[in-house]
Image (cartoon, rainbow, N blue to C red; front, side, top):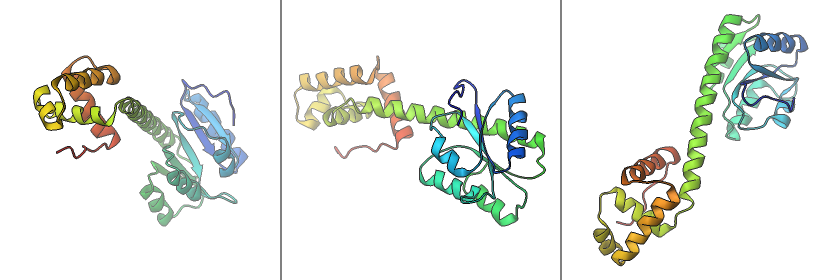
Length: 217
């Protein structure tokens, strides 16, 4: 794999055992302002692909050793999210249905309709950008949550529920001063400046990480 991939330019990973197909697709992709990265087989892709790149994949169905469908299944098993456009010279309805059920964004037969391929590539890049943004936001939220203690987490939940410091102190059998210290730590560790920001962060954490409320009662 070309290690000089420009991270500012979306990459299109072309996995096809036919050199002529790889070359023609690479030229088309470069003309669209994208960065083509070609692989002669699925094993090469598995070996060289680096997660976190914005891009999508053009994947041949029929290849020796590991088929395109097998590569798609392997990526799913390893939680690798990359939009896939399948291409094939021998497609059938069963393969097409299976590919879409597993999350493919298009299924094209050779000779390829280039206008449809370009439309699908653009859609795949937009999807990749959305996925990357969501993954980045989730990671940031999880890193900030990791800064707070279990006791601070309980205080956070009660603050979001609208309890005052005095009410939290009674519920947790703590002093008012201790609760105020926990609240101050929450603002500092989570990087928020207001109660509204704290609530927004908590709701975002519930949404993006699947975090559940603790059973503090």
